[in-house]
Every structure is written in structure tokens, then in C-alpha cells.
Length: 321
View 1 (cartoon, helix red, strand yellow):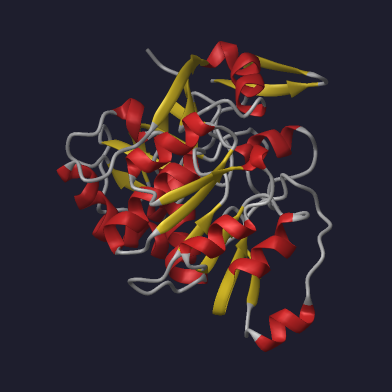
View 2 (cartoon, helix red, strand yellow; view 1 turned 135 degrees about the horizontal axis):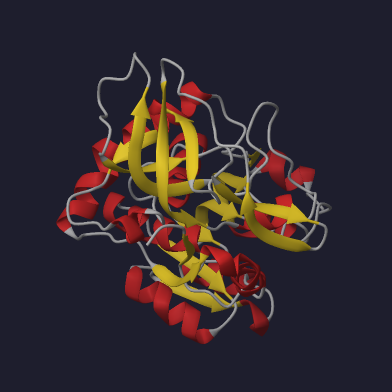
């Protein structure tokens, strides 16, 4: 098969060993589209290595068709159109993955759009409703609201009764977030978000892919028993935490990564998506937000585009015609 290889400073689409036959609880997929994520940028830079035993090929989500199934797999058959959450290996013509991380496409969703579903909605579900244990009516501050994860969080929270305040890098992005269901927003180029969020009424949870100096400001807008879920380090690894505020307001700071979670937990997340999110996708109440699609041979350009932070929604790679 062919796959994207990291060759020094270059990304090359070239021959690569194909994955072996699926184990009893695995499936092999022929990839149609691969979703891009900031984790891929971090891995390329050497800052986010794959877990032991995972493919070293970039790519954490794909859509495509089932090629082969292990003997213990009963809910999927060769030829089925599916999407999958991966630990790695998506920027390739073929990938092997635990069957519990593979779902049939929601009714009415194309292979193209389905490639933008697994990572972002799994991230949203894990962090909002498992890590932060949000209840209906609790309020969210969401940073990077126009990102792929952000567009998923806004729509999911809107449907499950959790008002969202977003921060983003332009007024255009703020308006796009409001069209998806965010109640209010703040352009980060206008200075700190603290007063705007407090005027909105504060929040019960912050979903933070930024870290760095944002953590201290996150604390300032949390209501009693508030939770900060840290999912990225776009703003740096170091930040100041006011332990007195954390103690008196009973705050929690939770670090969370999806990629390194055990297969069993990923299966729980995917089951929850199938039960709760897939019907909303099929009915059109929520939708994958796709910004651009690049041919797999143009992965270098696609990564530069994602790195520039201009996208509103998901950036995809087309692997098969």
C-alpha cells in the first residue's frame, strides 16, 4: 500500500508495508478519506509520539470500506461503509483497527463528511460528558470554538442542553460559531475573555486546548464546583494555577487525552456516539463541518493550512477516488 511518510522536513506519499490480517477483534479498512487533527501536527514535530504498539503513520480518524473482519466481529461485514477512530495509521490506503472503534455511517452522511466525525465527536463526548460529567443546564466556555472539535462541541452541547460561550481568532469565526448554536463569543485578539464570560454569567466547565496563560483566566470564570478540562497545549506547557481559588471554589483541573485511552474506553465512547449522536446526525439536527478537502498527495499543503489556524471546521485528506 501507500502511506504518508515523514522524511526529514518533508511528507511523502510512498510505498509502505500494509497492515497484517485482522485479529479476532479487529477489522481492516480501505481508506477513502482521513481527518486531520492538531495532534498530527504535534506528532510530526516530535512532540506527541504514538503510544507503544500503535502505527507510526499519522492520522487519527478515517472513513472507508471494511476490507476484512476478524473471526470475533459480528456487527461489520466486508464492503460496509464505515468511519473509525484510530490510534494512528490514517494517512494511508489501508488501516487495521479494533472493531469497537468502527461505526457504520449515519444515515444520509457521505464517506467524505464521515471522515470528520470520529475524533471530534469522541473528543467532545469524552470530555464533556465523561470527564466533566456535565448535567443539563451547566454552562461551557469553549476555546478555539471554530476548530473541528469546537464545531462538534457547540452542536452536541446545544442539543443536550448546555449553553456555550466560545473564544476564537476572528469575528467571522465567532459568527460561524453562533450559527451552530453558541450563545456568545469573544475574539481573542480583543484581549482577555474574563470580563465577557463573567458578564455572561460564568461557566461550570472550560474545554481548553490552549493551556499556558489561559489556565489562570479559566479559573477566574468558573462557578463553584467548576471543571477545567485541558486537552491541548497550543499556548504552552507552563501556566499559573491559583491554588487558593481552586480550594475555596472547589475547582478541578483535569488533563485529558483520547489517543492513549484503552480500547475498552474508546469502545464505550463510540457506543455512546452511536446511541446519542448518530441519530442526531441522521436527522440533520447536527452535521459535520468540513472546511476543506486536500488530495492525499498534497498533505504538506494541508498541514500548512491547518497550522495557519484559518480553518472553520475539519480539514480532510482524500485518499481514494
